[in-house]
Image 1: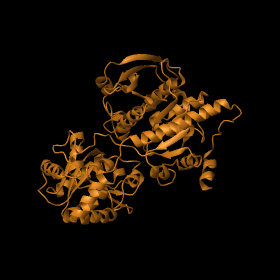
Image 2: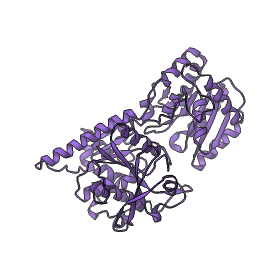
Image 3: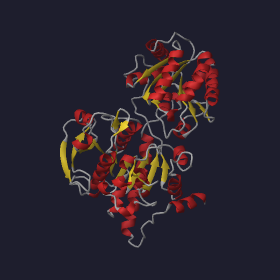
Length: 498
């Protein structure tokens, strides 16, 4: 099979969050299974500077207010093919893929409509690229218009939309429709309209053949009012039709404590002396006092979703009982200031690094005894899987992918009461395990034995692609099959209730 994987991030070249890791990990795992998967992404400055031997393979015309562009082809060091949307006016800017200094680019609608339109044109074979996919797989709102462009043009190419976080929906004023080549008829409850705005994510949900998200529990949660971001009626209907799946992400195989080049001291499940040596170095680096108590690590984006205010509420109790906390992350100013005040008030026992770098992140994960993850919601999460591989037991809110990847009392500790009291009750269980060397060793070994590699997710996605391709073949062979009627939100609400 041939798969075009459309993303706004790719960890090798441009990464703002977990999507970059997924976009680098899943296509490679599929490729190892013999799938001809190619990645389409914007040509940001970091991509052009790091990718070598970019060859222009197509010139795409503009449409409405969307600028024309070129498609460049490049390969990663391990041979994965990348298609790059080359349009300097849209992508040659300093900052992250979405903005700069905490502000989104005001023309993000045009930037990612161009990405979506390029994906649709490659999928239909109209781009002039000498390769055409069997399935178009887009990610998050940034690729959401691609399935819609195909549907509006009456082109039958199987499409998959993966939601990594439904809280981000790509909302823009309805006045953008004309310049984005969105037909007027699409501004409807059964189309792109969402509270009198245009939603890129809703466009993808309405028009994709199948929707996936990044864990089974999160797939259920997005059908609920509490976690559906206002789209729960639509996602409930998609689920009722059997078109919604939860597939857990994987982690890169480089997360191996026996060989990780970022660790000063390597270790294995049957010899954890290196783990303690790493802990001593992290304590020294963060100016914490030497301690024989447990070290609690936090490696996270410092945003409200991650529940860092709950960590702050619990920190004094953790320190009082002999624990220390190492925090690394970057995020919104209010959360950063809150944690800075917390660290200053416990200089000997709480260390904070504002920012992010991969070596230090891995060292804190490897050095810690426990990993704090009181996320308000967590579609999948990667840190809890990385932590378990390093014998670091997660302490996490039982939500989304955290609930799916942590075995409570065996490889970590889950809690349901999202509060300082709930988190500390789980920390109390962790303190008890730490005091019992036999229990701690058994839990660490169980955690390190877990396999979170991408091969499992790749197997599920390959099966999904095959089903979708089979349906298209059957549809083409049976012209009497009526087209799928687009259900209204009223329809899907009734279906969900039934």
